[in-house]
Image 1 (tube, rainbow, N blue to C red):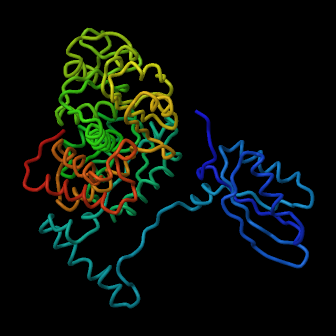
Image 2 (image 1 turned 180 degrees about the horizontal axis):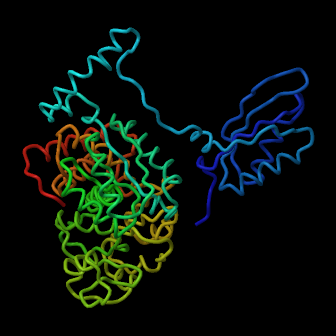
Image 3 (image 1 turned 90 degrees about the vertical axis):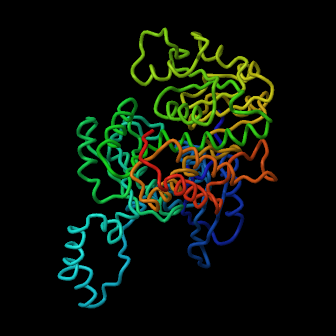
Length: 467
């Protein structure tokens, strides 16, 4: 797909230019000729002879940014002082911090917050451990845990490189749900070590958000931690994605006038996200599903079925289709991709049923070009922010954890996930609903509260039933 200038690759160039003449218009002309977009121009200092200005420019990628800076350097009478990558500037020193909620201005306040006063609180919790949620940060804290093995679309880049992503996740928890989240980046990819480490860290947290742990290890890590812990364990790559997909599909089906129990759904991707989406879709009433991985359709006759693929084979593809993805897409009503870029074409989408729905969620390049898909499908969604209907996990996980923490839930159930998806779908009103608006903006003020309320209600008084 053709790349366009983006804020993700924006730079700020500090230039010294003559105070008179056409220097400013020259700068804009050079940037635009090089394919960039000037988004801001600020005078930093002014003198009679020269101006020092900061020019902010949206570019396509790092190489494009370097090319634009080089083009500016060639303009006569312009001197470049500094080129700053705005994304890196945002990350300098990290994106989150810890702050005290209580004043520590006097000796009395110090004595109550810490020793000797804190001893009475510790003894109270020792006598009644349930008070830990009432008297400590546990009631509002989540550990965001990764081993760095499957970070975004970058792969196995390790715990240090994963830290900026986990910081970002923690910032989103705070921004959208008021939750204090803490990045925990583990220097091990051994399943036993991960499970044991999270287990012994768990007393300080009200919930565990597993993040960017590669499949199939993520399934075992999550399952074992659920057995060991009395707090919710939620793998966002699986269940956050599943909630958003079900919510979006609910509204997309309303747009085209079809029912989830009657449509044929083809999925590409049988990993963590695909498996979770499948389970939630079946819980919501989907019946006719085929799941494909890189070898083609998953079916009972395959000789490479691990436990996860075996479950998929036993719960989908009743007709035993054994062909490839293109064949599985033919005559389908819905395509959901959580797999790899460019594996389908517009011609493949043309073989789907009328009023088709296409969710091509691979990032940054979807399974099929959204522009090509829109020529043949009634509703198209992606994981990208530059197309309508972005399916983004930020719509789900802050509200889900807000509801879980408020309910003091000890686990996560399919009922809770389905309730979250229903609430998220209902944020889009009937008057707003349309082919280009099936999910709300992540900045919609009702999203987190609605999802939290639905999860809180679903968690109330229910016995613990694991996914």
